[in-house]
Amino acid sequence: MIKNRYFFLILFVVLLAIKYNYNELIKEPILNITYEIKREYIDFVQNIRDFVQEHVEQKKGIKRLKKEVERLKKSAELSSAFAGKLRSLLQDRSTLYTPELNITRAISYVNLANYDRVWLDFQALKKDRIYGLLYQGYSAGIVINKNDKALGLLQGDLKCIFSVYIGDKKVPGVIFGDKDDMIVRYIPTWMSIKKGDEVYTSGLDNIFFEGVKVGRVTNIIKEESYISAVVKPYAKVLVPGYFHVVTKP
Image 1 (cartoon, rainbow, N blue to C red):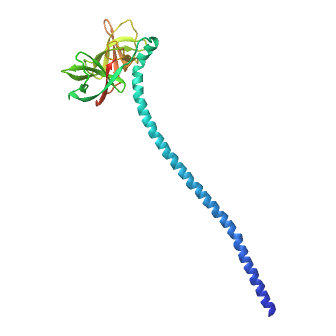
Image 2: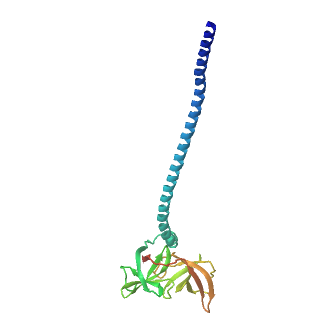
Image 3: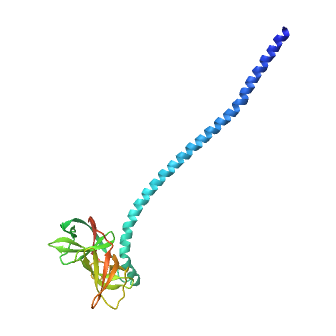
């Protein structure tokens, strides 16, 4: 009987020892697994935060770049327009070249049946002066005095006339408005031009300065005593808003 009691006592002690040792054996691996799961979770959350932050910074950067592009676009338009005259200045540094532009607003069409004539809000108008008109860096027409008001004759108007050069060889001519296209007339027959040649203002008429882009030659017509060239203009003024008037070529 006493032996049985000792046996059960020893068995109880052994089971109790196994229980506590078993808990310690199980506890450490579980803690290790939990730690790894927590670490992976924290890394995952941090990666998500980094990705979101990078995306936000990219969007801000894109907005800044768009603003910078708009600013540079305006400068590029004027720079390309001045390029022809500036090239000449490199050859002759004795001349000071300071062209002036005046921004002006289109008030309304003169006639709703004619989209090639607009009234302009241009106050610095001189009676007998003809001014060049720019739109988005390209030639857009001319400005004349009509009853002491500024009348803009866009490039589709038959009375829109100014002097131009054609191509790299600066073949001279006079360009006339002709509805959707324009026509360069009085080109000497011995001078060579071709389709695709770029047309730009010569500045010889004191309306524009040299180098304002007008368009490209799309067709060549041989007349009896001179050559004519059909030109597709660059400027497309569908709904006139603001223009630049050349006040000093």
